[in-house]
Length: 168
Image (cartoon, rainbow, N blue to C red; front, side, top):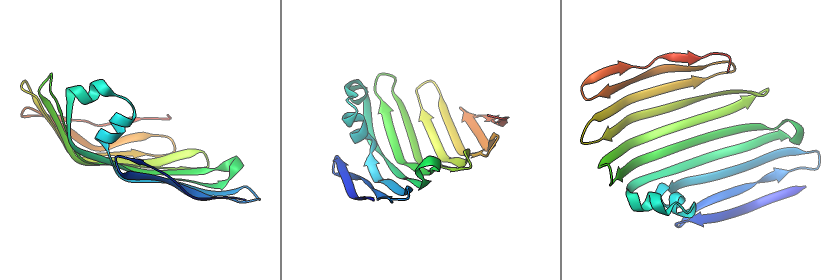
């Protein structure tokens, strides 16, 4: 039996943790969690110096709760991921991006994926144009990816976004 009690590392004082078990019969229950990892810290940890020079990361964090469960030969992954309080300004283009929250949930059942992507109040402010995406809801099921709700405002023009990717 493998018992992972707590493997963790810190990115700018924010923990990323791994824990769980793999039993002798190959039954697995492994988790990876992160709560409010700063996006600026992740960019720095990835060595993206140019991104840090050109952008002010005023705020923004990511949270993750991922798991692998089941037998090693047929693991069932689940992922819950969110981006919170995003506020980034690109200095060369004088463009600012804000977004209070975006969430992504994905589960696998019998090697088929199901999940959702949701966003609220994405705003892109540029001297030439203002883009706003008030709400987005995208559903992922066993066969299709469907945009359930989405529209964009470009300056004051509304652009409805609908569609489906069938049999992906």
